[in-house]
Amino acid sequence: MEVTKNIKDKNGNEKTVKIQTPKIDLILNAIRERGMFAQITRYQYLDYNMEEEMQIIEAIGKSRTPYFVIDDENRFTYENFIRWCRCDTRMQCLHPETSQVIPGNLRHGIYIAGATGTGKSWCLDIMQAYCRVMGFKVKYVEERDTCPLSWNSVRADALCDTYTETGDIRRFKQRNILSVQDFGSEPLESLYMGNRLEVMRSLIEYRGDRSDCLTLITSNLKLGGDKLLNRYGDRVASRLSEMCNYFEIRGADRRKWRNLAPNAPKK
Image (cartoon, rainbow, N blue to C red; front, side, top):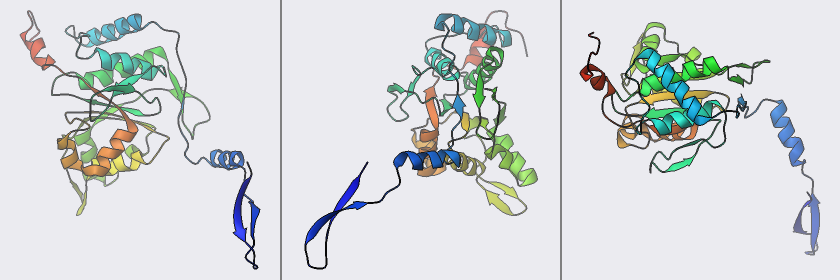
């Protein structure tokens, strides 16, 4: 593409000159070769039937507790989590502020909000088992070979405990896939040898600036809600909206249903 501009010479006469610019393709290739703006490579697994996959999910859930069910409160989340795992471009999520259904982004992570006991944490655990059993693969920037699409969850308060004990959360910042349960339940600040740190704020801000990692989160805090904004501020709220596909699991406390069910095992 030729770029020109009009200039005036020393006599005041206007003329058109060509501007020498590198070709856009060369610039983009140089960016890719240097690993700038690197992204995780996702692979599609599109030979599937959603009804059958949901039966698999329900079977995995029931293997953990016989009271697990797929219903109207969690179906949208599970169906689109399946599409996310399979890198299916038909994936949808919710707009954090309006709750309208919008297209999802397969290069972004997952944020599941809901009240206590609605099954958010179980959702991440069940989908983790689903991914491992199905053998989905992903390729990270620094890896030569593909790796399993898999994650191990850590509670937000346990992350804070790690900082209190060691003063170091780099391994969590640098994980290719990080799964955090109960975001928002942790202490706002943690102390290590006189140094105070808002651990989750630091973690989200760091990972939010990267395009080569995925972050999965469960929380009682709605992504577009005032409680999250008041606790963490605009910067963290904006980062989370940019880096995660948003879902809500609504309904009553499923733990209470289990305890009220006939012949429920006693704790």
